[in-house]
Image 1 (cartoon, rainbow, N blue to C red):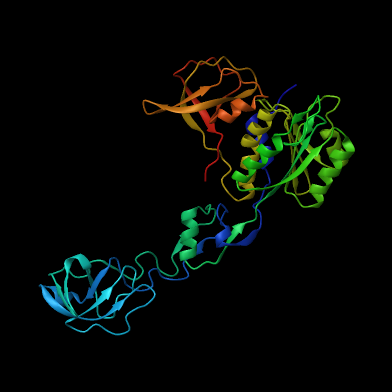
Image 2 (cartoon, rainbow, N blue to C red):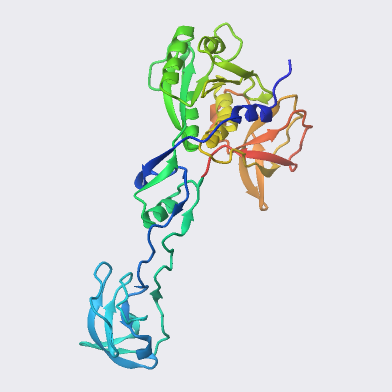
Length: 401
């Protein structure tokens, strides 16, 4: 039986995906969201010339040489000096305060001598320690681009530009269902043949890190009616993507494919040339996408990283192409078979080079090893054996903005 290549599987999943609609989010709640439109400044920053230091505002023409000036008032942030500076006068000024009309220079307070309202100042270059109007940006400047993720610094910029709310891509909704009689939730008592469910939590966390919203559909037993009921609820709720973990293989208790047929899901492919993650399933029903992940925890999370993260990015209007890096192998690896392998590995730096060291055991049930892994070493089908020191290609497991 011919297995679909990983790249071909990803292309089929991404085919026809269009960005979600635009919604507005309060700027205080928009961290990590993706801008749907560019933003131009609604105001000029600073809106007037301001002092960059605590000191005295003066006319540059008055301080070509050392002189004594008359103190006539002060200007503080939020409380400007009401008046105009005339020759021979000065105003006490504080950092961020508006410059008085007529003043164009600030002399820092350490450089003056005071005697009542008589201020002795040294000769000073004009326009020192003054931030001119519009130093940061001017009204109408386009400072944030469509498709940018709103990092903390961009949130601060958007607020300074005058935006109380910002246009962002609606988060795509991924509804995640775990299947299996053997599963119980963390904290519940396990029976003699049961284990604690983990896939739904790891998958949801990775999707959230990618900018998507996740809905936990809980656990369905190995019963077609129960599985269908939970998936139908997600479809009726308008989920963009339905995700199941487990039940996608060919065992007597694997019912997912059967259920999908009853729900009108058209299967696009099933089984791919990938390790771990061979029994991956993909289909569509109207606008909804279906992804059936394997039940083994490592397989489920690796498939989420390879397929669901790019899918989430496509919904957000982002470039779904992954960033692979070159590294040096830190251990020997054997030749590969017909399936693309994804070896869990740690990353380090040696002699200025990125080094990826795969674990000696790569069983798809070993979450403890995956928890220590920084990256996946990608081994293409039929790759020959490689030795420590050879160049390899890696994909980081943890997501960054």
